Image 1 (cartoon, helix red, strand yellow):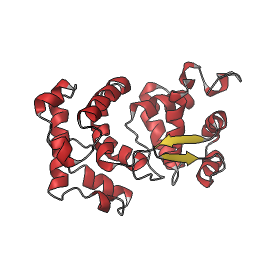
Image 2 (tube, helix red, strand yellow):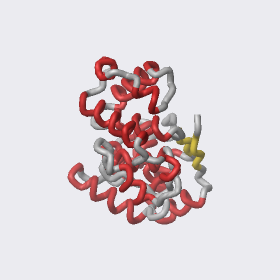
Image 3 (spheres, one colour):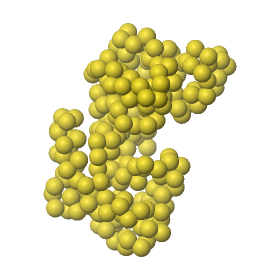
Length: 221
């Protein structure tokens, strides 16, 4: 499995520490990061579509069932062989089946060319992907982060990031999206790294504490 190794000594991380004293506290708590990336672009997009508006656990279960159903061969031909009834049996809704079929059709007819996406800038990638019904901005931004490994992406509408920002910056639920917008501006150029640290705060169960300053020294990563 491909990984994105992020060290506290990296230039981007050091820049974030200098620019944002609050985020610096979280970075010092967590240390280095190892992000599991999604090298296969088709697999990555479908995984994100499955994950839209459902819990992580349910999404993982459906994704694993789909992977087994196609023998982990993430090709347009292999996926196209699945009947809608089979896809529904895996737990996919009709709308998500349609979205997946839209992606497969876009690849077949040349509308979606993965090799070209790697050469485009961030906004062009978002524009290209969101032309396909079923792919919104969040899905496109997740693709930029985990597949293209772009360094300046912060998905403002990600509920997990909003929760982590609310906790870290001690803001209200009503203000947490605005806080992320402020972070995006403050973290300009390295926003992806800030996003990864916010997600890691959730993965390490740090949000159980009242604030970053209440985490005990013996908290296990």
